[in-house]
Amino acid sequence: MTIKNLPLLLLLLLVACAQRQLPVAPPLPPLPPPPPPAQLTLLVAPHDDVGPLLAYHQSLRRMTQGELLKELSGLSLQQKSPKVLLQSAMVLALTRGSGDLARAQAQFDVVASAQEAEAQGLRQLAQLLSAQCADTRRLVDEGDRLRAQLKDNQRKNEQLNETLEALKEIERGLPARASK
Image (cartoon, rainbow, N blue to C red):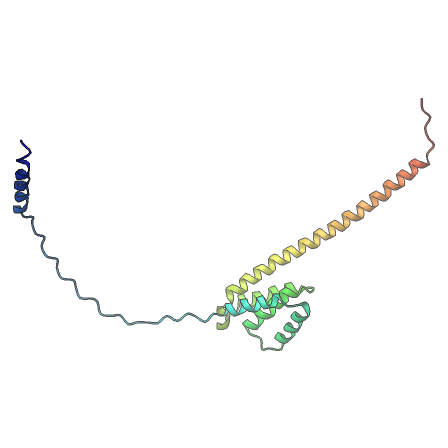
């Protein structure tokens, strides 16, 4: 073949391809009509009882012991409800008075096991705070035990030092040995 015939050959190839027809796909069936709109229901977020209580707890953490005691006395004047019990237990957990942590845990447990409708949204928070009180009580007891152990060890150390000093004094009072 020569180069002169190449354009003619390409033209014939192009014409042959153009005459060949591809099979046509059948048309798609029409789309079914959309379903009728369902009854729309609006979902409203449930009332959040926990958020304000967490903010209240944060404000309690910034208070002094005197302010906490005033807050506790104000809460004791209010009508007892799960929310007020929870608030007073939060204050008790922070006052660190004798037995306050145990009282706080007991109040958290009361709210956690309450069957009232108001307590339903507070139950998990009360369980969490009760568990935190139990952990804190365990740590306080462990700290007390370690402080007592340290005090006992310091007393024993002082006794041993006194005994050592007494032995040194006895040794100084002994006559010097003769050298061989």
